[in-house]
Length: 216
Image 1: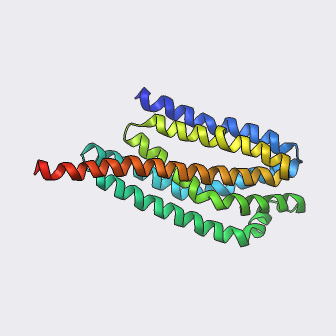
Image 2 (image 1 turned 120 degrees about the horizontal axis):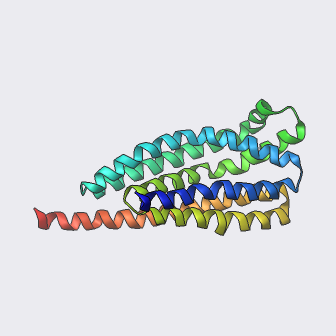
Image 3 (image 1 turned 180 degrees about the vertical axis):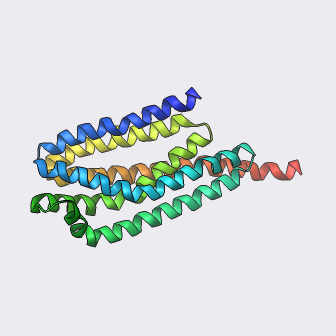
């Protein structure tokens, strides 16, 4: 239990620590950015609620099929979940690209805060699907008893990509540079997680197919 719980705990700690550092960075460019970050995170949590429910269902599906030796079925289910997540993320990005000012007006009547929130939603929503992929890959590796892979992916995405890019982006483009860094880091992390997952699960499924004729 601890072999799963400790890496998962470490992964959970990464987000609040990184958000603390990012909030301090954005605060240097005015309170509007901090307000936009808060509003954006709430909208993002609503979007990710669908993916969170999917990831919760994916844990027993992958774990049970993997434990029963149905590794190819576990990988097929994972692929369907990933495709749905990318489609959902793309749809949300398409909506927010045009509706971001309207959504921002729900939370504030301050023009500066609304403009910052609009920038956040338009830029960060591009990466929502890839953030969902990171969530799915994380729970899938936990389900097959590979929790350190999930922790490694989370640490690299946040501390290896997001924070360094955020500081560089803030220096180059100010507040929006931090938002751009978040989107780029999440997309890159999602692609890396998907490649790692594809290699691991497809190799396991291929080994299963090669074994079945001999077993029969």
